[in-house]
Figure (cartoon, rainbow, N blue to C red):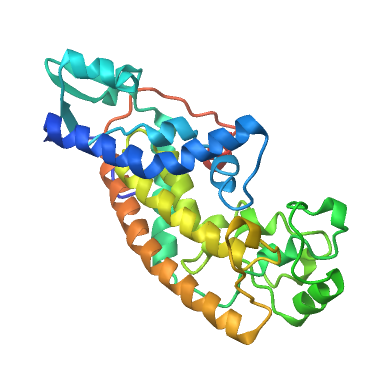
Length: 323
């Protein structure tokens, strides 16, 4: 378990010039807005997107927060009163102003946030120490519709590429080895016994591994739960990794998503499984680098003092994460 650091130090932040950080704000908004704004527009009109909505519904970070760039705790911003008016979110609870320097207020660090950072550090460390596995072929999406009636299928506006009989035959011909709790818990009742593993919330630390598409997408989840301290630059990197992972996930699913612009990756064929494995490995390489970066952030963050103590004795740290 992670126990390397104690609450004992203050780190000197890097000061960003006005031109430097305002350019970051613009670039961040240009990259994120197409996803966040499209989701908000769809939601207002009652429309859905089978691939991208997941990034804003399953993951709980708000589109507005995602769009609004903030520095990390390791960065100070040179600012003037006029610019503070232009970026109102930099005036909220989390920030402090000292002359013309704006920074995150480290007096706002809660004890339970430090507990979360320790949990994330442990998880990253454990995953990095285990060899990644690339033999699941994305079968979790198939296990989520295995033997379901058409009216109970999650994305029922999209037809399945195979008949239910063909889907059942294919699933039963494969070895399901899903190690990710949050994927496994959505398996149908009939599919759960087919999994060779039994991931649970309590065994997440031991079972997650770096080949898993969902474990790698979840780097976005863990980074957003460390907002604002981790800053928007890193959150954006994990968001786009999650976009890539989600698109691969759904291309390899049994759904026909051609109308959404996604050609199927047919894992029911040997060629398709090889292609999936290749793309899975590429994504895992990107994720490994980000996971190391997230671990290093947590290590530095845990050097800071926490000032608000909130530690409900009856709640496991990860239970707090899901609130």
